[in-house]
Length: 314
Image (cartoon, rainbow, N blue to C red; front, side, top):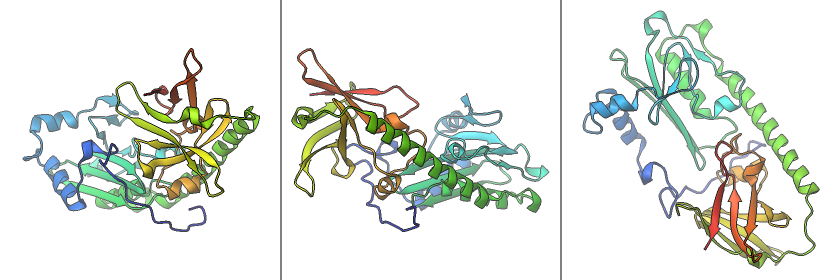
């Protein structure tokens, strides 16, 4: 929380009823370490050596040194890391890991991610003289990607980076937190301006929006229904994938335009990461009507990096 208060977050229902990672695979830190060591040693019984080479082969350039492979990012030292994580959005430039000369041009394979109330980072050094796995798993959702900073800090220790070349990761984390706060305040101001300038109808029939909506491929479902609040007034809610744990109230801003925005701390209590891929449009839902003026679909921009998706009412 903004006031440093800790809030317990309900465990994520990974792979239950539609949400999940990696086709629903569940694991433990010890199993992950075993899996990563297999990757460092030719794949073992986990993956063929041919497939492993393909996994770690650069496919798309991220910057001058790092590339995106198949699910992994790869680079050679000296280089910055964390390009596929959350921190690059909140600092001007990521730090360069500058090892001693004996470790220059060493290949680094890394990955990071986030879940409900969790952050993680893994760094692999497939060099035969190193054979190192750095795995950092955090069960907290901070204003910066702590797991990424910690894993890079450990990497500098593993590589014996000279004292004068070591990175002040605390300073980088503080910089990221300030940018996170600035961005959230700017987002709130933009949304509130939109809300205040909207022409909210004097009367709106919330019942006409109730229903089940699917994308074209029927991969993602949104359920919308009415529910009474503490004051006994009916409110519109939507459930992502129909999950009660992913239920959020909808506020009407103007005809057929609703918002599900919550202040950053309220989102954090729900285990939601707030980042720059969730711009103002992410928090708006626009309903469309057919030729008979009946609600036909809703349009939601779930990621600023891709076009908005239309979900059709069934």
